[in-house]
Amino acid sequence: MLGKSLTHSFSKFVFESIFSQNNINNTSYSLIEISDLPQLRQFFRTQAFQYSGLNITVPYKLEVLPFLNKLTTVAQEIGAVNCIKYVEGQWEGHNTDGPAFLEILNKSKRWNSHALVLGNGGASKAIQWALKKSGITFDLVSRTSKEYNFENLNQKWNNQWNTIIQTTPVGMFPNSHETLNFPFDRMNEEFLVYDLIYNPVKTKFLLQANEQGARIYNGQEMLEIQALLSYEYWNREN
Image (tube, rainbow, N blue to C red):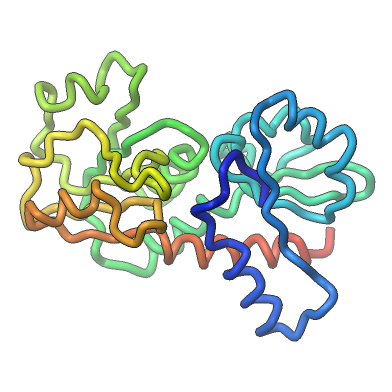
């Protein structure tokens, strides 16, 4: 896995469990920390070819795109990648985050009809793709949006919102004390709140939502599903 800071990541454990369950003994999973874009560029010039496949995480799901030669249809539709592999001398990008979240949506009846997605990064783009595929209406909140941002959200609150999906890294270990500027008092027991973060198990955002009576879910299930989908993608015949 390639990302900026990976002290929070459970991915190595998840993938080593997959390898063990499938009796795979000649494969390893490494965590590769890349501090900035120049180092990312250098990595793809000199080191990336040592690997047959990579997961990509925060903050490089969009930044990695210029280093890829082609994208799968799903990755093109989402506009971000979290999974790449080396195919016949070229890097191909894929996205398993979107299909993983879509699987969660399809197998569960817990989702309501109008969602509010917090953040507009690579993870958010995968969530937006899954919501569209499921026919779930949503609005988007980001720091730079003039329509809905974290400063005007309370003032522009829409009472139709009843599902909140938190896609930013705010509150992720080791910064577990952090949370978003969000009008938590707007929530009640009819709300469903999903935070893509899985470490800590309950972010401060989820704890504050739960205090208002909302049903809360973290990103562990999505992590495990996307890991299996990544493994299948790496081993798929081209």
